[in-house]
Length: 279
Length: 354
Image (cartoon, rainbow over the protein chains, first blue to last red):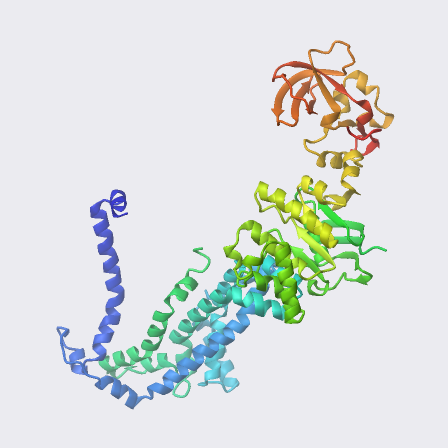
Protein backbone atom coordinates (compact mmCIF):
# COMPACT_ATOMS: atom_id res chain seq x y z
CA UNK A 1 0.00 0.00 0.00
CA UNK A 2 2.64 2.50 1.10
CA UNK A 3 4.94 1.23 -1.62
CA UNK A 4 2.25 1.74 -4.23
CA UNK A 5 1.55 5.23 -2.97
CA UNK A 6 5.19 6.12 -3.14
CA UNK A 7 5.42 5.06 -6.76
CA UNK A 8 2.45 7.25 -7.53
CA UNK A 9 3.62 10.32 -5.61
CA UNK A 10 7.35 11.10 -5.45
CA UNK A 11 8.65 11.49 -1.91
CA UNK A 12 9.10 15.27 -2.26
CA UNK A 13 5.53 15.78 -3.39
CA UNK A 14 4.27 13.65 -0.55
CA UNK A 15 6.22 15.73 1.98
CA UNK A 16 4.92 18.93 0.44
CA UNK A 17 1.37 17.66 0.59
CA UNK A 18 1.72 16.74 4.25
CA UNK A 19 3.27 20.13 5.05
CA UNK A 20 0.45 22.00 3.31
CA UNK A 21 -2.17 19.92 5.08
CA UNK A 22 -0.59 20.66 8.46
CA UNK A 23 -0.23 24.31 7.59
CA UNK A 24 -3.90 24.66 6.72
CA UNK A 25 -4.95 22.73 9.81
CA UNK A 26 -2.83 24.94 12.10
CA UNK A 27 -4.15 28.06 10.42
CA UNK A 28 -7.70 26.92 11.14
CA UNK A 29 -7.04 25.83 14.69
CA UNK A 30 -4.80 28.71 15.79
CA UNK A 31 -7.52 31.34 16.48
CA UNK A 32 -9.51 28.81 18.48
CA UNK A 33 -6.47 27.71 20.42
CA UNK A 34 -5.53 31.35 21.10
CA UNK A 35 -9.09 32.01 22.26
CA UNK A 36 -8.83 29.04 24.58
CA UNK A 37 -5.56 30.27 26.08
CA UNK A 38 -6.71 33.88 26.41
CA UNK A 39 -9.83 32.87 28.28
CA UNK A 40 -7.63 31.66 31.15
CA UNK A 41 -5.43 34.78 31.34
CA UNK A 42 -5.90 37.99 33.23
CA UNK A 43 -6.72 41.10 31.18
CA UNK A 44 -3.12 42.29 31.58
CA UNK A 45 -1.62 38.99 30.48
CA UNK A 46 -4.03 38.99 27.53
CA UNK A 47 -2.63 42.16 26.03
CA UNK A 48 1.00 41.47 26.98
CA UNK A 49 3.59 41.95 24.21
CA UNK A 50 5.21 39.62 23.37
CA UNK A 51 2.26 37.26 23.89
CA UNK A 52 2.52 34.91 26.82
CA UNK A 53 2.45 31.18 26.25
CA UNK A 54 3.28 30.20 29.78
CA UNK A 55 1.19 31.63 32.60
CA UNK A 56 -0.82 30.60 35.65
CA UNK A 57 -4.36 29.93 34.43
CA UNK A 58 -7.19 31.68 36.20
CA UNK A 59 -10.92 31.11 36.21
CA UNK A 60 -11.50 34.75 37.08
CA UNK A 61 -12.93 35.66 33.67
CA UNK A 62 -15.57 32.96 33.73
CA UNK A 63 -16.63 34.06 37.16
CA UNK A 64 -16.88 37.67 36.05
CA UNK A 65 -18.83 36.88 32.90
CA UNK A 66 -21.35 34.96 34.98
CA UNK A 67 -21.50 37.86 37.45
CA UNK A 68 -21.93 40.60 34.93
CA UNK A 69 -24.33 38.84 32.62
CA UNK A 70 -26.44 35.83 33.35
CA UNK A 71 -24.74 33.16 31.23
CA UNK A 72 -27.33 30.52 32.00
CA UNK A 73 -30.16 32.75 30.75
CA UNK A 74 -28.44 33.23 27.40
CA UNK A 75 -27.56 29.57 27.19
CA UNK A 76 -31.16 28.65 27.88
CA UNK A 77 -32.32 31.04 25.17
CA UNK A 78 -29.85 29.52 22.73
CA UNK A 79 -30.96 25.98 23.48
CA UNK A 80 -34.66 26.82 23.27
CA UNK A 81 -34.47 28.88 20.08
CA UNK A 82 -32.18 26.50 18.20
CA UNK A 83 -33.99 23.30 19.20
CA UNK A 84 -37.48 24.64 18.61
CA UNK A 85 -36.60 26.38 15.36
CA UNK A 86 -35.06 23.15 14.11
CA UNK A 87 -38.18 21.18 15.03
CA UNK A 88 -40.49 23.75 13.43
CA UNK A 89 -38.26 23.79 10.36
CA UNK A 90 -38.28 20.01 10.07
CA UNK A 91 -42.05 19.92 10.40
CA UNK A 92 -42.40 22.35 7.52
CA UNK A 93 -39.55 21.04 5.38
CA UNK A 94 -40.31 17.31 5.57
CA UNK A 95 -43.78 17.48 3.95
CA UNK A 96 -42.48 19.91 1.33
CA UNK A 97 -39.54 17.65 0.49
CA UNK A 98 -41.84 14.61 0.42
CA UNK A 99 -44.14 16.27 -2.08
CA UNK A 100 -41.27 17.43 -4.26
CA UNK A 101 -39.40 14.13 -4.20
CA UNK A 102 -42.34 11.80 -4.78
CA UNK A 103 -44.95 13.88 -6.59
CA UNK A 104 -42.73 15.80 -8.91
CA UNK A 105 -44.58 18.38 -10.97
CA UNK A 106 -43.61 20.50 -13.92
CA UNK A 107 -42.41 23.34 -11.70
CA UNK A 108 -40.77 21.40 -8.88
CA UNK A 109 -37.25 22.26 -10.05
CA UNK A 110 -38.18 25.93 -10.41
CA UNK A 111 -39.59 26.05 -6.90
CA UNK A 112 -36.44 24.46 -5.49
CA UNK A 113 -34.26 26.95 -7.32
CA UNK A 114 -36.44 29.84 -6.21
CA UNK A 115 -36.21 28.72 -2.58
CA UNK A 116 -32.45 28.48 -2.79
CA UNK A 117 -32.26 31.87 -4.45
CA UNK A 118 -33.75 33.47 -1.33
CA UNK A 119 -30.55 32.42 0.42
CA UNK A 120 -28.55 34.49 -2.08
CA UNK A 121 -30.15 37.67 -0.81
CA UNK A 122 -28.19 39.31 2.01
CA UNK A 123 -30.15 38.98 5.24
CA UNK A 124 -29.77 42.68 5.93
CA UNK A 125 -32.00 43.34 2.94
CA UNK A 126 -34.95 41.95 4.86
CA UNK A 127 -34.00 43.50 8.18
CA UNK A 128 -36.28 46.52 8.15
CA UNK A 129 -39.50 44.74 7.14
CA UNK A 130 -38.88 41.89 9.55
CA UNK A 131 -37.98 44.26 12.35
CA UNK A 132 -41.17 46.24 11.76
CA UNK A 133 -43.22 43.02 11.59
CA UNK A 134 -41.75 41.85 14.88
CA UNK A 135 -42.32 45.22 16.48
CA UNK A 136 -45.94 45.54 15.34
CA UNK A 137 -46.77 42.06 16.58
CA UNK A 138 -44.98 42.78 19.89
CA UNK A 139 -42.50 40.00 19.35
CA UNK A 140 -39.30 42.00 19.70
CA UNK A 141 -36.91 40.41 22.18
CA UNK A 142 -38.97 37.23 22.48
CA UNK A 143 -37.86 33.67 21.88
CA UNK A 144 -40.81 33.20 19.55
CA UNK A 145 -39.54 35.84 17.12
CA UNK A 146 -36.14 34.17 16.95
CA UNK A 147 -37.66 30.72 16.56
CA UNK A 148 -39.78 31.87 13.62
CA UNK A 149 -36.96 33.76 11.91
CA UNK A 150 -34.37 30.98 12.44
CA UNK A 151 -36.77 28.33 11.18
CA UNK A 152 -37.71 30.32 8.08
CA UNK A 153 -34.17 31.34 7.22
CA UNK A 154 -33.02 27.71 7.45
CA UNK A 155 -36.05 26.38 5.59
CA UNK A 156 -34.61 26.50 2.04
CA UNK A 157 -31.54 24.53 3.07
CA UNK A 158 -33.64 22.04 5.03
CA UNK A 159 -35.99 21.44 2.11
CA UNK A 160 -33.05 20.97 -0.24
CA UNK A 161 -31.28 18.53 2.04
CA UNK A 162 -34.38 16.50 2.81
CA UNK A 163 -35.39 16.56 -0.84
CA UNK A 164 -32.10 15.05 -1.93
CA UNK A 165 -32.28 12.45 0.83
CA UNK A 166 -35.87 11.50 0.03
CA UNK A 167 -35.10 11.39 -3.68
CA UNK A 168 -32.75 8.48 -2.99
CA UNK A 169 -35.58 6.40 -1.50
CA UNK A 170 -37.04 4.28 -4.32
CA UNK A 171 -40.59 5.49 -4.79
CA UNK A 172 -41.74 1.91 -5.48
CA UNK A 173 -41.28 1.21 -1.77
CA UNK A 174 -43.81 3.89 -0.90
CA UNK A 175 -46.07 2.64 -3.68
CA UNK A 176 -45.80 -0.87 -2.27
CA UNK A 177 -46.97 0.48 1.08
CA UNK A 178 -49.93 2.12 -0.63
CA UNK A 179 -50.78 -1.15 -2.38
CA UNK A 180 -50.53 -2.89 0.99
CA UNK A 181 -53.32 -0.66 2.23
CA UNK A 182 -51.35 2.04 4.05
CA UNK A 183 -52.99 5.43 4.43
CA UNK A 184 -50.88 8.53 3.81
CA UNK A 185 -50.10 8.85 7.50
CA UNK A 186 -49.18 5.15 7.86
CA UNK A 187 -47.04 5.38 4.74
CA UNK A 188 -45.15 8.33 6.21
CA UNK A 189 -44.84 6.95 9.73
CA UNK A 190 -44.04 3.32 8.96
CA UNK A 191 -42.02 3.59 5.77
CA UNK A 192 -40.87 7.11 4.87
CA UNK A 193 -39.69 8.24 8.30
CA UNK A 194 -37.72 5.07 9.15
CA UNK A 195 -36.05 5.14 5.72
CA UNK A 196 -35.44 8.89 5.83
CA UNK A 197 -34.15 8.91 9.42
CA UNK A 198 -30.52 9.47 8.37
CA UNK A 199 -31.50 12.45 6.28
CA UNK A 200 -33.76 13.89 8.95
CA UNK A 201 -31.04 13.51 11.57
CA UNK A 202 -28.29 15.14 9.57
CA UNK A 203 -30.57 17.93 8.39
CA UNK A 204 -31.72 18.55 11.95
CA UNK A 205 -28.16 18.57 13.28
CA UNK A 206 -26.93 21.00 10.66
CA UNK A 207 -29.79 23.37 11.31
CA UNK A 208 -29.29 23.13 15.05
CA UNK A 209 -25.70 24.29 14.57
CA UNK A 210 -26.72 27.02 12.12
CA UNK A 211 -29.36 28.35 14.52
CA UNK A 212 -26.97 28.19 17.46
CA UNK A 213 -24.35 30.19 15.57
CA UNK A 214 -26.82 32.62 14.05
CA UNK A 215 -25.84 36.14 15.14
CA UNK A 216 -27.36 38.64 12.74
CA UNK A 217 -31.01 38.15 13.60
CA UNK A 218 -30.51 37.54 17.31
CA UNK A 219 -28.47 40.75 17.59
CA UNK A 220 -31.13 42.75 15.80
CA UNK A 221 -34.29 41.20 17.18
CA UNK A 222 -33.37 40.38 20.74
CA UNK A 223 -31.70 41.98 23.73
CA UNK A 224 -31.52 41.15 27.41
CA UNK A 225 -34.60 38.95 27.62
CA UNK A 226 -34.43 36.62 24.65
CA UNK A 227 -30.79 37.13 23.65
CA UNK A 228 -28.79 34.08 22.63
CA UNK A 229 -25.15 33.34 23.38
CA UNK A 230 -24.17 35.15 20.19
CA UNK A 231 -25.50 38.39 21.68
CA UNK A 232 -23.67 37.65 24.90
CA UNK A 233 -20.34 37.51 23.07
CA UNK A 234 -21.15 40.66 21.16
CA UNK A 235 -21.87 42.54 24.36
CA UNK A 236 -18.21 42.10 25.37
CA UNK A 237 -16.90 43.92 22.34
CA UNK A 238 -18.06 47.30 23.51
CA UNK A 239 -17.01 50.67 22.12
CA UNK A 240 -15.35 51.61 25.43
CA UNK A 241 -12.58 49.16 24.74
CA UNK A 242 -12.05 45.46 24.42
CA UNK A 243 -11.67 43.16 27.35
CA UNK A 244 -9.88 40.37 25.52
CA UNK A 245 -9.79 37.86 28.32
CA UNK A 246 -13.45 38.26 29.23
CA UNK A 247 -14.47 38.28 25.58
CA UNK A 248 -12.54 35.05 25.13
CA UNK A 249 -14.08 33.48 28.18
CA UNK A 250 -17.57 34.44 27.02
CA UNK A 251 -16.88 33.10 23.54
CA UNK A 252 -15.53 29.86 24.91
CA UNK A 253 -18.61 29.41 27.04
CA UNK A 254 -20.81 30.16 24.04
CA UNK A 255 -19.21 27.74 21.63
CA UNK A 256 -18.35 24.97 24.08
CA UNK A 257 -21.77 23.26 24.12
CA UNK A 258 -22.10 23.18 20.35
CA UNK A 259 -18.49 22.05 19.85
CA UNK A 260 -19.00 19.15 22.24
CA UNK A 261 -22.31 18.37 20.58
CA UNK A 262 -20.79 18.59 17.11
CA UNK A 263 -17.94 16.32 18.13
CA UNK A 264 -20.33 13.55 19.05
CA UNK A 265 -22.49 13.94 15.95
CA UNK A 266 -19.60 14.38 13.53
CA UNK A 267 -20.53 11.47 11.33
CA UNK A 268 -24.10 12.63 10.80
CA UNK A 269 -22.96 16.17 10.17
CA UNK A 270 -20.45 15.25 7.51
CA UNK A 271 -23.05 13.08 5.86
CA UNK A 272 -25.43 16.01 5.89
CA UNK A 273 -22.96 18.50 4.49
CA UNK A 274 -21.96 16.29 1.58
CA UNK A 275 -25.56 15.33 0.94
CA UNK A 276 -26.12 13.68 -2.38
CA UNK A 277 -22.50 14.18 -3.39
CA UNK A 278 -21.05 10.90 -2.19
CA UNK A 279 -22.96 7.68 -2.29
CA UNK B 1 -70.13 -11.52 -15.36
CA UNK B 2 -66.90 -9.62 -15.76
CA UNK B 3 -64.69 -9.50 -12.69
CA UNK B 4 -62.45 -6.63 -13.73
CA UNK B 5 -63.73 -4.36 -16.43
CA UNK B 6 -61.93 -1.50 -18.16
CA UNK B 7 -64.14 0.82 -20.14
CA UNK B 8 -62.57 3.52 -22.29
CA UNK B 9 -59.60 3.98 -19.93
CA UNK B 10 -57.49 7.02 -20.85
CA UNK B 11 -54.31 8.54 -19.47
CA UNK B 12 -52.59 11.77 -20.39
CA UNK B 13 -49.07 12.79 -19.47
CA UNK B 14 -49.28 16.50 -20.12
CA UNK B 15 -50.34 16.77 -23.75
CA UNK B 16 -49.32 13.23 -24.52
CA UNK B 17 -52.17 10.72 -24.69
CA UNK B 18 -50.39 7.68 -23.27
CA UNK B 19 -53.38 5.35 -22.98
CA UNK B 20 -55.95 5.78 -25.70
CA UNK B 21 -59.25 4.37 -24.57
CA UNK B 22 -58.72 0.78 -23.48
CA UNK B 23 -61.70 -1.61 -23.28
CA UNK B 24 -60.99 -4.94 -21.67
CA UNK B 25 -62.92 -7.52 -19.72
CA UNK B 26 -61.15 -9.93 -17.38
CA UNK B 27 -62.85 -12.94 -15.83
CA UNK B 28 -62.23 -14.21 -12.32
CA UNK B 29 -59.26 -16.57 -12.12
CA UNK B 30 -57.82 -15.56 -15.47
CA UNK B 31 -54.11 -15.06 -16.06
CA UNK B 32 -53.82 -12.03 -18.31
CA UNK B 33 -50.51 -10.87 -19.74
CA UNK B 34 -49.95 -7.36 -21.09
CA UNK B 35 -47.18 -7.48 -23.62
CA UNK B 36 -45.70 -4.96 -26.01
CA UNK B 37 -42.54 -3.10 -26.92
CA UNK B 38 -41.15 -0.60 -24.40
CA UNK B 39 -43.13 2.60 -24.30
CA UNK B 40 -46.36 0.93 -25.43
CA UNK B 41 -48.12 1.83 -22.18
CA UNK B 42 -48.36 -1.63 -20.64
CA UNK B 43 -46.84 -0.61 -17.31
CA UNK B 44 -48.87 2.60 -17.27
CA UNK B 45 -52.04 0.59 -17.80
CA UNK B 46 -51.11 -1.67 -14.90
CA UNK B 47 -50.41 1.35 -12.69
CA UNK B 48 -53.80 2.79 -13.63
CA UNK B 49 -55.44 -0.43 -12.52
CA UNK B 50 -53.34 -0.38 -9.33
CA UNK B 51 -54.34 3.21 -8.60
CA UNK B 52 -50.75 4.45 -8.56
CA UNK B 53 -51.60 6.81 -11.43
CA UNK B 54 -54.88 8.65 -11.73
CA UNK B 55 -57.28 7.63 -14.51
CA UNK B 56 -58.10 10.55 -16.83
CA UNK B 57 -61.05 9.00 -18.64
CA UNK B 58 -63.27 5.92 -18.62
CA UNK B 59 -64.31 3.65 -15.77
CA UNK B 60 -62.73 0.76 -13.94
CA UNK B 61 -65.01 -1.80 -12.27
CA UNK B 62 -63.80 -4.53 -9.93
CA UNK B 63 -66.19 -7.19 -8.73
CA UNK B 64 -69.21 -4.97 -9.33
CA UNK B 65 -67.68 -1.93 -7.63
CA UNK B 66 -66.57 1.26 -9.38
CA UNK B 67 -62.95 1.79 -8.28
CA UNK B 68 -61.99 4.43 -10.86
CA UNK B 69 -61.30 7.09 -8.24
CA UNK B 70 -60.46 4.89 -5.26
CA UNK B 71 -56.95 5.20 -3.79
CA UNK B 72 -54.66 2.17 -4.11
CA UNK B 73 -55.03 1.35 -0.45
CA UNK B 74 -58.78 0.80 -0.86
CA UNK B 75 -58.71 -1.32 -4.03
CA UNK B 76 -57.67 -4.64 -2.50
CA UNK B 77 -55.07 -5.39 -5.15
CA UNK B 78 -51.53 -6.64 -4.57
CA UNK B 79 -48.58 -5.73 -6.71
CA UNK B 80 -45.17 -7.27 -7.31
CA UNK B 81 -42.73 -4.66 -8.55
CA UNK B 82 -39.86 -5.08 -10.95
CA UNK B 83 -37.45 -3.76 -8.32
CA UNK B 84 -39.17 -5.92 -5.64
CA UNK B 85 -39.71 -2.78 -3.52
CA UNK B 86 -39.31 -4.64 -0.24
CA UNK B 87 -39.24 -2.56 2.93
CA UNK B 88 -35.49 -2.49 3.64
CA UNK B 89 -35.91 -1.73 7.34
CA UNK B 90 -38.13 -4.72 8.04
CA UNK B 91 -37.43 -8.42 8.26
CA UNK B 92 -38.87 -10.82 5.71
CA UNK B 93 -41.57 -11.72 8.22
CA UNK B 94 -42.49 -8.07 8.77
CA UNK B 95 -42.48 -7.43 5.03
CA UNK B 96 -44.92 -10.24 4.45
CA UNK B 97 -47.17 -9.39 7.38
CA UNK B 98 -47.21 -5.61 6.80
CA UNK B 99 -50.50 -5.48 4.88
CA UNK B 100 -52.29 -7.78 7.33
CA UNK B 101 -51.04 -5.74 10.26
CA UNK B 102 -52.39 -2.57 8.68
CA UNK B 103 -55.71 -4.37 8.18
CA UNK B 104 -55.65 -5.19 11.93
CA UNK B 105 -55.85 -8.92 11.36
CA UNK B 106 -55.48 -11.06 14.46
CA UNK B 107 -51.84 -11.82 15.31
CA UNK B 108 -52.33 -15.57 15.29
CA UNK B 109 -54.03 -15.49 11.89
CA UNK B 110 -51.20 -13.36 10.52
CA UNK B 111 -48.61 -15.81 11.78
CA UNK B 112 -50.46 -18.74 10.24
CA UNK B 113 -50.74 -17.01 6.86
CA UNK B 114 -47.14 -15.84 6.78
CA UNK B 115 -45.82 -19.27 7.78
CA UNK B 116 -47.98 -20.84 5.14
CA UNK B 117 -46.83 -18.50 2.39
CA UNK B 118 -43.22 -18.93 3.52
CA UNK B 119 -43.60 -22.70 3.22
CA UNK B 120 -45.03 -22.45 -0.30
CA UNK B 121 -42.19 -20.16 -1.37
CA UNK B 122 -39.38 -21.93 0.52
CA UNK B 123 -38.69 -18.90 2.67
CA UNK B 124 -39.25 -20.41 6.11
CA UNK B 125 -35.58 -20.26 7.11
CA UNK B 126 -35.19 -16.64 5.95
CA UNK B 127 -38.11 -15.09 7.82
CA UNK B 128 -35.90 -13.23 10.32
CA UNK B 129 -33.47 -11.86 7.74
CA UNK B 130 -33.64 -8.41 6.20
CA UNK B 131 -34.04 -8.04 2.43
CA UNK B 132 -30.44 -7.02 1.86
CA UNK B 133 -29.26 -10.37 3.22
CA UNK B 134 -31.14 -12.20 0.49
CA UNK B 135 -30.27 -13.04 -3.10
CA UNK B 136 -32.24 -11.58 -6.00
CA UNK B 137 -34.33 -14.70 -6.44
CA UNK B 138 -35.16 -14.84 -2.74
CA UNK B 139 -36.15 -11.17 -2.72
CA UNK B 140 -38.42 -11.85 -5.64
CA UNK B 141 -40.07 -14.66 -3.70
CA UNK B 142 -40.56 -12.40 -0.68
CA UNK B 143 -42.24 -9.85 -2.94
CA UNK B 144 -44.55 -12.57 -4.23
CA UNK B 145 -45.11 -13.80 -0.67
CA UNK B 146 -46.05 -10.29 0.43
CA UNK B 147 -48.75 -10.37 -2.24
CA UNK B 148 -50.15 -13.82 -1.59
CA UNK B 149 -50.55 -13.59 2.20
CA UNK B 150 -53.21 -10.97 1.58
CA UNK B 151 -55.32 -13.06 -0.78
CA UNK B 152 -56.16 -9.93 -2.78
CA UNK B 153 -58.82 -9.68 -5.48
CA UNK B 154 -56.23 -9.33 -8.24
CA UNK B 155 -52.46 -9.89 -8.40
CA UNK B 156 -50.54 -7.36 -10.43
CA UNK B 157 -47.05 -8.21 -11.65
CA UNK B 158 -44.90 -5.49 -13.21
CA UNK B 159 -42.09 -7.19 -15.15
CA UNK B 160 -41.22 -9.26 -12.09
CA UNK B 161 -38.54 -11.37 -13.71
CA UNK B 162 -36.50 -8.82 -15.63
CA UNK B 163 -33.97 -8.33 -12.82
CA UNK B 164 -33.19 -12.04 -12.57
CA UNK B 165 -30.57 -13.92 -14.56
CA UNK B 166 -31.72 -16.20 -17.35
CA UNK B 167 -31.66 -19.50 -15.46
CA UNK B 168 -33.50 -18.10 -12.46
CA UNK B 169 -35.99 -16.37 -14.73
CA UNK B 170 -37.03 -19.65 -16.32
CA UNK B 171 -37.33 -21.33 -12.92
CA UNK B 172 -39.34 -18.49 -11.37
CA UNK B 173 -41.60 -18.43 -14.41
CA UNK B 174 -42.50 -22.04 -13.78
CA UNK B 175 -43.09 -21.27 -10.09
CA UNK B 176 -45.43 -18.39 -10.92
CA UNK B 177 -47.40 -20.60 -13.29
CA UNK B 178 -47.69 -23.27 -10.60
CA UNK B 179 -48.70 -20.70 -8.01
CA UNK B 180 -51.46 -19.47 -10.26
CA UNK B 181 -52.67 -23.00 -10.83
CA UNK B 182 -52.76 -23.66 -7.07
CA UNK B 183 -54.29 -20.36 -5.97
CA UNK B 184 -56.50 -19.71 -8.98
CA UNK B 185 -56.15 -15.98 -8.37
CA UNK B 186 -56.95 -13.41 -11.02
CA UNK B 187 -53.62 -12.14 -12.27
CA UNK B 188 -52.42 -9.36 -14.54
CA UNK B 189 -48.83 -9.69 -15.58
CA UNK B 190 -46.82 -7.12 -17.53
CA UNK B 191 -43.81 -8.16 -19.55
CA UNK B 192 -41.94 -7.25 -22.69
CA UNK B 193 -40.79 -10.84 -23.05
CA UNK B 194 -43.09 -12.70 -25.41
CA UNK B 195 -41.87 -16.09 -24.13
CA UNK B 196 -43.21 -15.21 -20.68
CA UNK B 197 -46.42 -14.05 -22.30
CA UNK B 198 -46.85 -17.25 -24.30
CA UNK B 199 -46.04 -19.63 -21.45
CA UNK B 200 -47.99 -17.99 -18.62
CA UNK B 201 -51.07 -16.43 -20.11
CA UNK B 202 -54.61 -17.63 -20.47
CA UNK B 203 -55.06 -14.59 -22.63
CA UNK B 204 -52.47 -12.18 -23.97
CA UNK B 205 -53.17 -8.50 -24.53
CA UNK B 206 -50.80 -7.07 -27.13
CA UNK B 207 -50.38 -3.32 -26.72
CA UNK B 208 -48.79 -0.76 -28.96
CA UNK B 209 -48.72 2.97 -28.56
CA UNK B 210 -51.41 3.04 -25.86
CA UNK B 211 -53.85 0.89 -27.77
CA UNK B 212 -54.79 -2.78 -27.81
CA UNK B 213 -53.64 -4.48 -30.99
CA UNK B 214 -55.14 -7.87 -30.23
CA UNK B 215 -56.43 -9.96 -27.34
CA UNK B 216 -56.39 -13.73 -27.48
CA UNK B 217 -54.95 -16.98 -26.22
CA UNK B 218 -51.23 -17.41 -26.94
CA UNK B 219 -51.81 -19.84 -29.81
CA UNK B 220 -54.56 -17.71 -31.31
CA UNK B 221 -52.09 -14.87 -31.51
CA UNK B 222 -49.50 -17.15 -33.03
CA UNK B 223 -51.77 -18.76 -35.58
CA UNK B 224 -54.13 -15.93 -36.40
CA UNK B 225 -52.50 -12.58 -35.71
CA UNK B 226 -54.78 -9.67 -36.52
CA UNK B 227 -52.05 -7.61 -38.09
CA UNK B 228 -48.44 -7.46 -39.06
CA UNK B 229 -47.37 -5.96 -35.74
CA UNK B 230 -48.77 -8.82 -33.67
CA UNK B 231 -47.54 -11.34 -36.23
CA UNK B 232 -43.99 -10.09 -35.87
CA UNK B 233 -44.12 -9.45 -32.13
CA UNK B 234 -45.15 -12.99 -31.23
CA UNK B 235 -42.76 -15.82 -32.07
CA UNK B 236 -38.97 -16.19 -32.14
CA UNK B 237 -37.40 -15.90 -34.53
CA UNK B 238 -39.73 -13.30 -35.92
CA UNK B 239 -42.20 -14.13 -38.65
CA UNK B 240 -40.73 -13.46 -42.08
CA UNK B 241 -42.54 -10.58 -43.68
CA UNK B 242 -41.69 -10.09 -47.34
CA UNK B 243 -43.02 -7.04 -49.16
CA UNK B 244 -45.20 -7.81 -52.15
CA UNK B 245 -42.69 -6.21 -54.51
CA UNK B 246 -39.91 -8.61 -53.43
CA UNK B 247 -41.93 -11.75 -54.05
CA UNK B 248 -41.14 -13.98 -56.99
CA UNK B 249 -43.84 -13.85 -59.66
CA UNK B 250 -45.39 -17.27 -58.97
CA UNK B 251 -46.01 -16.26 -55.35
CA UNK B 252 -47.34 -12.84 -56.32
CA UNK B 253 -50.03 -14.63 -58.31
CA UNK B 254 -51.21 -16.38 -55.14
CA UNK B 255 -51.84 -13.07 -53.40
CA UNK B 256 -55.41 -12.04 -52.74
CA UNK B 257 -56.48 -8.78 -54.40
CA UNK B 258 -56.23 -6.68 -51.23
CA UNK B 259 -52.67 -7.79 -50.49
CA UNK B 260 -51.31 -6.29 -53.69
CA UNK B 261 -48.89 -3.66 -52.48
CA UNK B 262 -48.88 -5.25 -49.01
CA UNK B 263 -46.77 -8.12 -47.77
CA UNK B 264 -46.80 -11.81 -47.00
CA UNK B 265 -45.96 -13.28 -43.63
CA UNK B 266 -44.48 -16.73 -43.14
CA UNK B 267 -43.44 -18.40 -39.91
CA UNK B 268 -39.84 -19.65 -40.16
CA UNK B 269 -41.05 -23.25 -39.80
CA UNK B 270 -43.20 -22.82 -42.93
CA UNK B 271 -40.19 -22.16 -45.11
CA UNK B 272 -38.13 -25.08 -46.38
CA UNK B 273 -34.62 -24.77 -47.79
CA UNK B 274 -33.20 -27.08 -50.44
CA UNK B 275 -29.62 -27.11 -51.61
CA UNK B 276 -28.99 -26.21 -55.22
CA UNK B 277 -30.26 -23.47 -57.45
CA UNK B 278 -33.91 -23.21 -58.38
CA UNK B 279 -34.59 -25.22 -61.52
CA UNK B 280 -38.30 -25.27 -61.86
CA UNK B 281 -38.68 -28.17 -59.47
CA UNK B 282 -41.51 -26.83 -57.37
CA UNK B 283 -39.39 -24.29 -55.51
CA UNK B 284 -40.64 -20.74 -55.50
CA UNK B 285 -37.60 -18.63 -54.88
CA UNK B 286 -33.86 -18.91 -55.08
CA UNK B 287 -31.25 -17.29 -52.96
CA UNK B 288 -28.03 -17.54 -51.07
CA UNK B 289 -27.40 -18.68 -47.50
CA UNK B 290 -26.22 -15.76 -45.35
CA UNK B 291 -25.91 -17.44 -41.97
CA UNK B 292 -26.58 -20.78 -40.36
CA UNK B 293 -27.40 -20.96 -36.63
CA UNK B 294 -27.22 -24.53 -35.41
CA UNK B 295 -28.95 -24.63 -32.02
CA UNK B 296 -28.94 -28.40 -31.68
CA UNK B 297 -32.62 -29.20 -31.52
CA UNK B 298 -33.29 -26.84 -34.36
CA UNK B 299 -31.38 -25.10 -37.09
CA UNK B 300 -32.04 -21.59 -38.36
CA UNK B 301 -30.99 -20.76 -41.90
CA UNK B 302 -30.93 -17.11 -43.00
CA UNK B 303 -31.34 -16.76 -46.76
CA UNK B 304 -31.14 -13.67 -48.98
CA UNK B 305 -33.41 -14.22 -51.99
CA UNK B 306 -32.51 -13.04 -55.47
CA UNK B 307 -35.27 -10.42 -55.08
CA UNK B 308 -33.42 -9.02 -52.07
CA UNK B 309 -35.67 -10.20 -49.21
CA UNK B 310 -34.21 -11.82 -46.10
CA UNK B 311 -35.96 -15.00 -45.02
CA UNK B 312 -35.34 -17.23 -42.01
CA UNK B 313 -36.11 -20.91 -42.19
CA UNK B 314 -36.39 -23.12 -39.14
CA UNK B 315 -35.95 -26.88 -39.41
CA UNK B 316 -35.46 -29.63 -36.91
CA UNK B 317 -32.96 -31.52 -39.08
CA UNK B 318 -29.36 -30.44 -39.08
CA UNK B 319 -27.88 -29.12 -42.26
CA UNK B 320 -24.66 -29.22 -44.24
CA UNK B 321 -25.35 -25.84 -45.81
CA UNK B 322 -22.88 -23.05 -45.30
CA UNK B 323 -22.93 -19.32 -45.80
CA UNK B 324 -22.66 -18.52 -49.49
CA UNK B 325 -24.33 -21.71 -50.74
CA UNK B 326 -27.01 -21.30 -53.38
CA UNK B 327 -30.38 -22.65 -52.27
CA UNK B 328 -34.00 -22.93 -53.35
CA UNK B 329 -36.87 -22.04 -51.03
CA UNK B 330 -40.18 -23.82 -50.75
CA UNK B 331 -43.05 -22.22 -48.99
CA UNK B 332 -46.30 -23.73 -47.85
CA UNK B 333 -48.78 -21.27 -49.32
CA UNK B 334 -51.59 -22.40 -47.03
CA UNK B 335 -49.58 -21.08 -44.09
CA UNK B 336 -49.12 -17.64 -45.58
CA UNK B 337 -50.59 -14.59 -43.83
CA UNK B 338 -51.39 -11.83 -46.31
CA UNK B 339 -51.23 -8.23 -45.16
CA UNK B 340 -52.52 -5.12 -46.93
CA UNK B 341 -50.42 -1.99 -47.22
CA UNK B 342 -51.57 -0.81 -43.76
CA UNK B 343 -50.41 -4.05 -42.13
CA UNK B 344 -53.88 -5.51 -41.51
CA UNK B 345 -54.44 -9.17 -42.22
CA UNK B 346 -56.59 -9.57 -45.32
CA UNK B 347 -56.27 -13.30 -45.68
CA UNK B 348 -55.31 -15.29 -42.58
CA UNK B 349 -53.39 -18.51 -42.90
CA UNK B 350 -55.63 -21.38 -43.94
CA UNK B 351 -53.89 -23.90 -41.76
CA UNK B 352 -52.15 -23.56 -38.41
CA UNK B 353 -48.38 -23.58 -38.54
CA UNK B 354 -46.88 -27.03 -38.47
